[in-house]
Length: 216
Image (cartoon, rainbow, N blue to C red):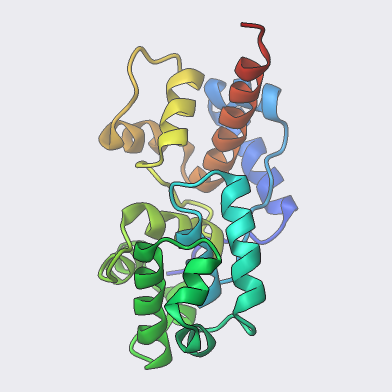
């Protein structure tokens, strides 16, 4: 089975055009956001590690930690990572649990028990099963990897809190949708759910900035 891949900004633009035409809610989102960013990462150990670094952190904090980690681990591959002492990795800002998670993944990659580069042709459910079998990797991490490292145009992250807030606001819902409702709502955005997610994340950020800018 072949999958549509988001490679360029032109791909994102194609997706936003389709979404605007198919859904009034997304047309309203686009009026505020315009074209969302491409947001692509490398497929493989580095891309997965970067997603884990960013878990439950602000963009600014995650970027700062990643920058220190990149400087400490050169080249950024599984073998080099395994050579680093825990003290060095913790000094970059990684929590003990994230050091453990990334070290476990690095061990699997270095021993060739895990072939991240070969996931591009696998079915989405199979990718999720493989990734979530790794200690410390949950459904959210797998979904983000599928969207940004593999570039799947129809990826989706129903458990993402910011997406839930954005969907609630953009669709005028009384309550925050749970994951089942998120999946049901996003059915109308196939086969461009990954682009819808990019639009909604941008929408959430802009709405939050507007709220923060309001006088107390």
